[in-house]
Length: 192
Image 1 (cartoon, rainbow, N blue to C red):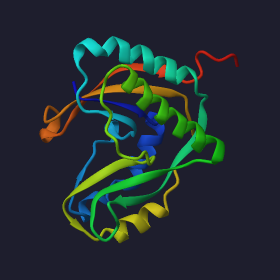
Image 2 (image 1 turned 120 degrees about the vertical axis):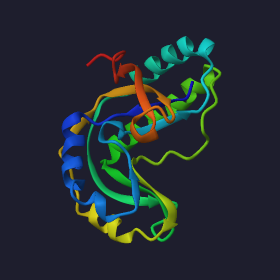
Image 3 (image 1 turned 180 degrees about the vertical axis):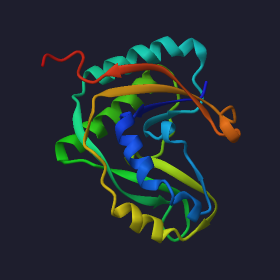
C-alpha cells in the first residue's frame, strides 16, 4: 500500500485558499492538486506491507500522543526545486518557533514510527509545505510565488495526525484517490 502520514488543514482553511486561487488557475500551465487533497506530508511511505499496517497504526498513534497541538495558518509559498526551474508550486505555513518545533518533532516521530514498524520512509528532508500544483516541464514561476507571498489564510489548530492511503490514477482525470485510514489526536496521551 502507498501511504503517507499528514497534517491536514481544516476545510475552512482549504476553502479560503481555494477561493484565493479560484480564477487564477487558468493562467498557468499547471496540474492542480484537488483542494480536498492538499496536506502537509510528514512521512511518505511508498510501500506499506499489509502485515505491517497494524503495528504502523499503533506506533503513529503513540507518536501523535507525544506531541501537542499548535496554531498555524497557510501563508506564502515557493517552488521546488527552485523558482527558476520549478516543477512544484507550494504554499507554506505560518509557524512561530514553538509551533515549528512541534511540527518538526511530529514529522520525526512519524518517520521513526514507520521505521520501527518495518516500513521504509522516503529519506527526503522534511520541509513543511502544501503542494498546490505541478508543472509538466521545469520553468520560471516567480510570478506565482510572488502572488502566494501576498496570501495569508485563517488561523487554525494543528491537532490531528492523519494516515492516508494513496491510489495512483484512480481519482478524477487520472489523479490519485486518497482514503483516510486513521486519524490520531495530538497530545491524547498527555494530561492537559
